[in-house]
Amino acid sequence: MPALNAAQVRADFPILANNPGDPPLAFLDSAASSQKPRQVLEAMDAVYRTSYANVHRGLYPLSVRATELYDAARARVARFIHAPAPENIVFTRNATEGMNLIAHSYARAFLQPGDEVLISEMEHHANFVPWWVLARERGLVLRFIPVSDDGQLDLAHLDTLITNRTKIVSLAQVSNVLGTINDVKTLGAAAHAVGAVMIVDACQSVPHMPVDVTDLDCDFLVFSGHKLLGPTAIGVLYGRRTLLERMPPFMTGGDMILSVGKDAVTWNAVPLKFEAGTPAFVEAIGLAAAMDYLDAIGMAAVRQHEVNITSYALARLRAFPDLQLLGPDDAELRGGVASFKIPGLHPHDLSDFLGERNVAVRAGFHCAEPIHQRFGGDPSSRASFYIYTEPWEIDALIDGMHAADAVFRRKRTPRA
Image (tube, rainbow, N blue to C red):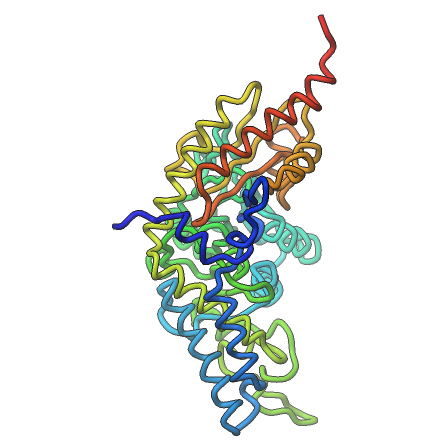
C-alpha cells in the first residue's frame, strides 16, 4: 500500500493551496466539516454549466442526462460502502436528517410504550435528541452504555443493557469527541440476538476508513457528505431493503409518489419514497466525485495516514503541561480526533487566539454535551485531521498553545 503524500494531496484543495499566508493556514477542524478538492468543485461546476435540469421530471435530453448522473451518484455511494444495491441508499440533507428519518419513520411506526432504545454516553446530539424526544412522546425508555475513564464503551453489563425489551441500538462507529472506534459489528450481533435493529452513526468513520455495511450487518447507517470532501446539503441513509419497504414516508410531496387522487395516494418505490421534492442532485454528483477521489487514494491509505498523524499529535499534546487528553491513548484505537482540556485556559480563548495565528480548531461541546458531562462538564478544545493534514500543522497548534498559555493561564495564576 503506497503511503499517502499529504503535501501532494493538499495541492488539490484550493482553500489550502491558495492560502499560503504568513503563517500558512493550519486547518485542524475536519471533524466538523472537511475541505473540498478541485475535483469535487469541478464536477459540480460541470453539471451547472453543461448538464443542469431537474431530474426525474423531463424527457428532454438535458433532464435525462442530469437524471443519469444522479442515478449514477447513488450507485457510486452504494459501491463506496459496499451496499447490496443502489436502492439501499436514501439521499438526505445530512446525517442528522437521516437519523431523524429513522426515528420518525421506523421507530414511530413500530415501537410501543415501554420499548427500549440503547445509545451511549458518547453520542453526537443527532443520535441523542431524536430518541430523547421520541421517548417522551411515545413512552419509550432511553438507556445508555456508560463510558470508561479511558474513553471506551463499558460493556461489562451489556447483558443487562440489551434485553428482550431492546428494540433499537444506535451508536457512533467513531466518537467525534473521544475519537474512540467502537465495535459496532459485535454490538449489532448482540442487538440482532434479541430482535433489535442496529443503527450506525458513521459520520466520523466512512470518510476516514474502509466501511462495509454488508460486513457490519447493520440495519441502518448514516453519514454526511460535507465531512467526506463533498458539499453540504447532501447526506446518506443506508437501510436494509426489507425495513425501508415497511417504513412509512418521512416527508411527502413531489417525487416520492406514484399517483395522487382525491381518494388515494400511492407512494413511489424505495428509495424515492423517502426523497420528497427536488433532490440535491448536483450535491449528490459532487459527493460521488469525492468518493472517486478517496478511492483513488485508497481508504486503507487514508486510515494509515490518520493513524500516523494522530499518533504524532497525541505525543505532542501529552507533553503539554497539565493537559487532559480525552479518549484512548493509542492512535490505533481512535479516529483522527484529539479533544483536550487545559486547566485555566478556556477553549474559546484558546480557539480565538489560535485563529489569529491561522490555526483552526473547534472549541465547545462539539454537539456532544453528555460525554463532556461524563468527563467533568467543561467544554474542550478539539483538533481533527484528514488526508491533507501535515505534521507542521500539529507543530503550529502546539506553538500556539504555548503562546496562549503564556497570555491567558499564567496571567491568572497567583504568584507564590
